[in-house]
Image (cartoon, rainbow, N blue to C red; front, side, top):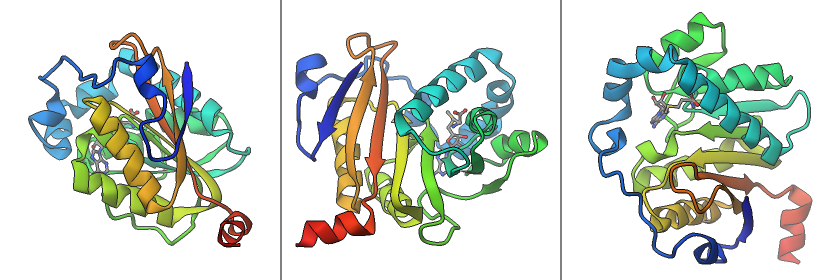
Length: 223
Ligand SMILES: C[S@@+](CC[C@H](N)C(=O)[O-])C[C@H]1O[C@@H](n2cnc3c(N)ncnc32)[C@H](O)[C@@H]1O
C-alpha cells in the first residue's frame, strides 16, 4: 500500500506508479454509455453476482479501515447501487443512507430494506452538514470533469465539520486521478490518496481520503 499526502500537487505518486500511466482497457462501459442506461440493462446481473458482491465488500471494508469513522456514525453512500456497501456499513454498526441515479439498482437496495433514495450525486437532497462520513465505491468514474467538481462541492456541503469521506474509483489515467484530487481540494477538503497494489494495474485500488476541517481548525488557519 502506498499512502501519500495530497496537497494539490503531484506529490510522490510518480515514483510508485509509472508517471503518466493510463489504463489499457479502452472498452469500459462508462466510456460508452451513461449509468442509468447501463444499469437498467445490466443492474440485475450486477445485483445477483456473488463475485461482485465479494469484491465490493472487500473494497468497503478497506474504506472503513481508512476512514476510522466512530461507531454509530451516519454515513452517506454515494452511488449505493444495489446496496453491497450498505450491507457492510450496517454490519459494522453504522447508520447508512444511500443515493443512486439508477432505478433498477435502487429496486434491489429497497428489496433488501436499505434506507435509499433516487438522487444524483451532483445535487444531493440533504441539508448542509447532515452526515458524519461519506462513502463512494466504484461510482466516480461514471462522471465527467465538471460533474466531479459538482460532486466534490456537494460532498463538502453535506459533510459535518471534522468528517471524513472515502472515494474509491477507477481513474483512466494518472492525470484523471490527480484532477479528481484537485477538485476535492478546491471544494474545501484536505486529502490524500491510499493506493493498494500500486504496481499491479489489474489489482490496483485507489482511495481518495478527504477530510473537512473542524471549525476550530478552520479558525486556526485564518490566524
Ligand atoms: C459500479 S456501481 C457500484 C455500486 C455500489 N457502490 C457497489 O459498491 O456495489 C456504480 C453505481 O453508481 C451509480 N451512479 C453513477 N452515476 C451516478 C450519479 N451521478 N449519481 C448517483 N449515482 C450514480 C450507478 O447507478 C451505479 O449504481
